[in-house]
Every structure is written in structure tokens, then in C-alpha cells.
Amino acid sequence: MLNSSVSICRVIGYLTISGNGSVNVPDGRPWFAVLNDNSYDWQEMSFDFNISGQTLSWTAFPAEPFSPSPPTMNIVYGNY
Image 1 (cartoon, rainbow, N blue to C red):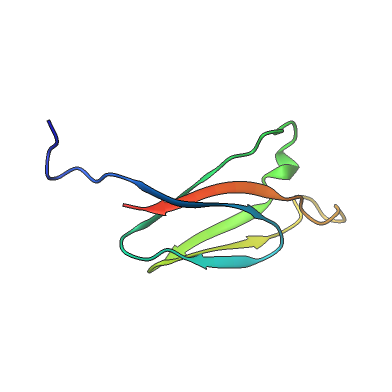
Image 2: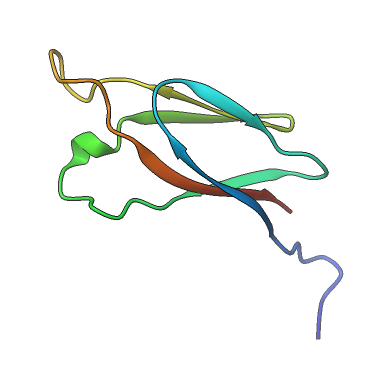
């Protein structure tokens, strides 16, 4: 039985991100999940995510001073 107060997620796409960027998520409230396949070091998690309206954006930053540019990361995103 489906309760009408429950939201169901819809997957819109998958992205491999690096650097700074954004994606528009139409028709609903955006959501995202990180799909990191080789998480052996916290330095890989060097992105700041923000949801504003229907836009999901991310900013890359080094995890430590003088570290190399952040690696790529896979995300899945959609709306509900």
C-alpha cells in the first residue's frame, strides 16, 4: 500500500564530476548520492555539494593544503 504522504525518488542521471559544476534537476525536489567505487582515502571525498531550488552544484577543494587537485567522483541524481 502506498501512503500519499510518502515521496518516491526518480533517477534522472549519473555523472562523473570533477572541478566545479552544476546540473539542473527539473520537476521536483533534487536529491543526489555519491557512488565512489574506490574509497580508500578521505581525500577522495573533497567536494562540497549544495542544493538550491532545482540546481545541484558542487565545488572541489583540496582535502589538505598542497594536495593535488581532487579526483573525479561518480554521483547519481534525481528528484522526488
